[in-house]
Image (cartoon, rainbow over all chains, first blue to last red; front, side, top):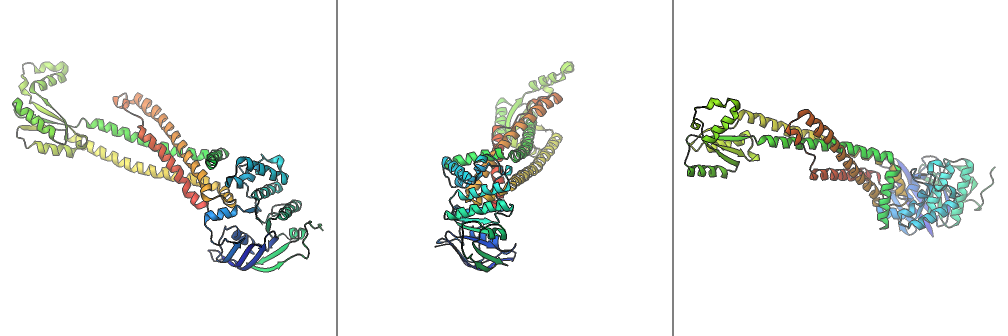
Length: 234
Length: 297
């Protein structure tokens, strides 16, 4: 079953700048895929269409069996509760503690405080930050902040995880650590879509790679053998 | 219930977690509303003062000859029926003579050998508040002139002209300065709240990304705006009361030592409640407008 189906998608911004053209894409449930390309190729726009931050100018997007092309603000909010997000700039609330940041998506859904805290703590233990629950994000390193963002994304047990340049602000070792986490999350059944232009990362964990250039898909390749193990560094 | 608890908790925590922004907003609302409240306080007290002065506007109607008691009562009743007249009293020749003697004080011997009949009897008319102007007094005098027995009228025409000009100037100043002050208050408060929300636009973006509905995001911000508005308004009333007490009540009393200073009163309860309501409304509206722009799913 497909997790995402994009049919003849085009996105032209209000100022006339074209970002995506005739995108036909199918991502099966449980897949791990990279969206790659140089800056301005349309990677982030494609992700923005998937979490309904933008509407396509043309075409249809199905998520599961649901057409998400024209949803109301309220329905978009409910759709996002099934999606986890990880961004290059972490997007953490600086005035709240680590555990408050992780708990936020469940608070929004009205889950009880007891359950929210238990699940937040469990995920912080999973990402190795159980000793820093009361810290503020700025007191953490970049890698730690990204792990908080991953824990926040995972707390809703998402069907889809979208990551936009998740390793962009991290050094190679931390990037490797984050990719290991994504791999583990994918193994739990979550579909993972990572937008990146970092070829090192893609070489580290080879997966289906959709390459964009000037808003067009120029290649869609799969590694000869998928492996759950990260490749040896050169 | 769970949601309500979250909203209350979030509102209070937001203010605690952003103390600088909160104090800046509360401070701005407080100062802006204090200026407005103090201006209202001055306008109301000046209005009170002019109302007291206006009691001095009286028309004295002199009688050619002393009428019979029946005639006197009839005229008095006729004058009393007039819509511009609040109160009418009759002063007989003897009473006028006695009054004059009192006014002369130590020189009252000047009246020795004179009879009370040298002074005319008169009616003293106090006008209703609406008629206390030059025009109102003249209108009434024209009506009264129809009675030939009323031989003379005195109502301080020059004083009335100056009083009318003063009241007009006062109203004009009140409307212009009040209008400007209200506009400035709205402008300053709405822009301060807009800036505080702008400073937290990342939070709004993150909330939308994790699936919060627009209302869920907006409610704590609106409640925060309302709470800051109310706190600001209470501070404004406190500040205004301090200004009233130290500047108007004590300072002015010591300076003027007149009874007028003693009549200075603080804002009535209805105005105080209006200031708090204004703070509440400004807080909510000031937050709602920028939220419309920044909370976009």
